[in-house]
Amino acid sequence: MQRIQKNSLFSIFAWLIIIMGMSLLFIGANEFNNAQHSTHWLETTGKIIQSDISQKLTSRDQTEHIIYSPHIRYEYTIEGRIYQADRVNFLPQATTQSAAEAVNKQYPIGKIVTVYFNPDDIKIAVLETGATIQNYEPLIIGGVLLLLGIVLLRRQPKPKTV
Image 1 (cartoon, rainbow, N blue to C red):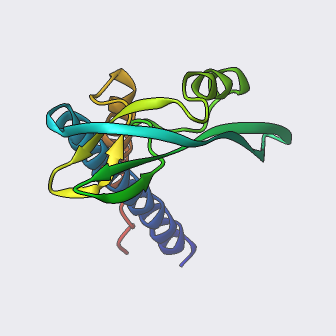
Image 2 (cartoon, rainbow, N blue to C red; image 1 turned 180 degrees about the vertical axis):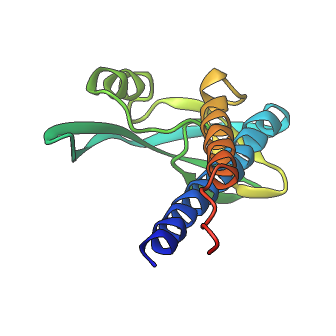
C-alpha cells in the first residue's frame, strides 16, 4: 500500500514538472515570437510620462532579497487617438537596482521616444524591438523541465506484483 502511494506521489511530482516545463515553453515561445515580430512593427513618436522604480521584497533560502523593476509608461498617438503602454521590451523587468536605475536614466519623464506598435493590435507597443539571448532562457528552462519530467515518469519504479 505504501509503495503504491510513493509511486502515485512520484508520478504527480513528475507531471507537475512536465506542466511547469510546458507552461514555460508556451509563455517563452509567445514572448520570443512577439520579440522577433516586433522588428517589423510600425513606429511612431511617443513621450515618456512615468519613469520610476518599484521594489519587491522576496525571501529565498531564509535570506531576504529586494527585486527592482523599472516602470516606464509612455503615450503615443495613432490616427488621432492617444494610447499608453508600459513595456520597454520583451524581457523580464525584475532586476538589480543598478540595472533598473539605468533603464530609468535612459527613459526620463518628458523624453521623446520612438514607439514600435503592433499593426494588428495597436495597444501593444514597445520601446526596444527584437530578441536577445535572454529571450531564450524560458525556452531552455522549459525544455529542460519538460525533459526532466518525462525522464522521471519513464524511470518511475514499477509496483511489485504479488
